[in-house]
Image (cartoon, rainbow, N blue to C red; front, side, top):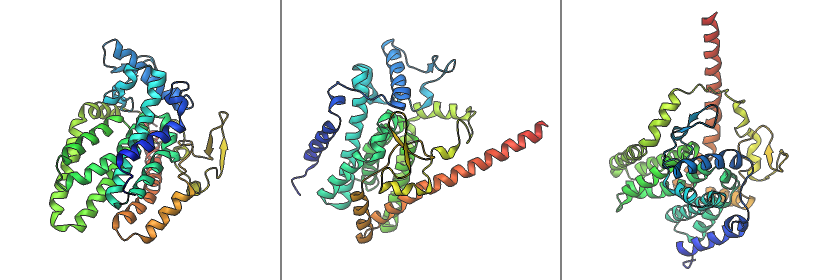
Length: 351
């Protein structure tokens, strides 16, 4: 499979995305359902208005008698590629922005998998699955989440090169990490750095003589990414410090977490789901994503890889696949307990 170079894979992936979304890319149709029409498009429209007025959108007076805009972090205000939909017709350019990051993420996963496996066919399969799994396609309605997912494999790929001292590796990692940080997709950013930290720990164990350098470079990467992104992170942290939200704000926390039996949806996409009025299926009790289905063939290949792999990276990533949902559920449960105890303490002190 030597013919499957990164350029040819990029062409193949681009053709697959064009085949899947011809009307959107040609301007005949656009995304509208759920949060794309209710959240992503209005934010981009307001940002576009202020941009052409020569202003930086620090404040949005059109929601709830006025709310911070730049400090929300997920508004993509300071994300450089947002110029695509600020300069071009919005109904076409915002969906193109999302699909471009879908392509960018698939290409990055190809390079990341190729660096780990040295097998171009396996790398191409990883890139296609990353771009066309249920979660990536569902995230098209959130421009900030899709952009953060698009940078996820690039930060990991460049980060491993950075702490091994490859030429320009550190600079490229900081630039990619800062780009992802400016997207405002907190969950993909968190998982990116968890995976990167796991890789760094594994390399420290396997290369004990270079452990000090790896830790130093990894810490330097994180510091420089935070420093470059400070113009966005500091306003967000200031807003977070004044937020009145607790773990029960809006609705029950379990409405957004994958239920325990949700693992079956990796094999059966519509297991215990129900359609909405718009025809979108959701799991009972989980309303964040309509799908994270990757395909039965993909799950089987993952099982074979974990069974036959000798390297620590494959088995380590398989372990991380189970850790985030369980840890997230425990974290949310602890937050609910703390919120209940705080409310009980406040009621007692007021009485």
